[in-house]
Image 1 (cartoon, rainbow, N blue to C red):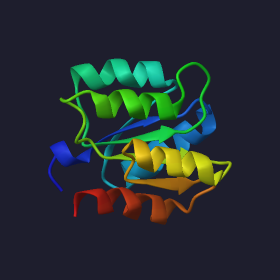
Image 2 (image 1 turned 120 degrees about the horizontal axis):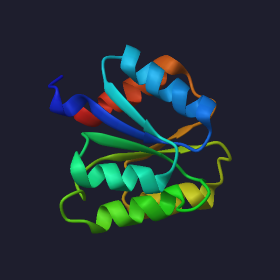
Image 3 (image 1 turned 45 degrees about the vertical axis):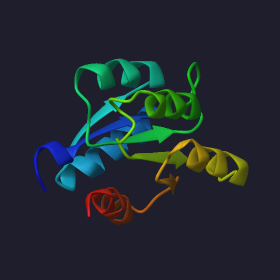
Length: 124
């Protein structure tokens, strides 16, 4: 995996989940950087675009769905693959995320090994 394909941004407002995802991805060989809000993630996207993004669906302020929409509307970022993180499993939100351009979703709680494989699968 190239260095550029290893930078993953993760946004989740739950500090425990954010730390877990970043740690799991880091141990899986990725450079994972966590953001506590969609707003902080969007700022970072403009300065250093990642190989992929993982977004929590529900966050205070800008939601993950809102961030996904903004990301996909930016021509410089539109090709960045986005996986959504969700804990509620609401089908309507999952469908909406896919319609907005997400390549998939990961249900919380997740299996650590499966999370790493899911992210690796973005680059195959």
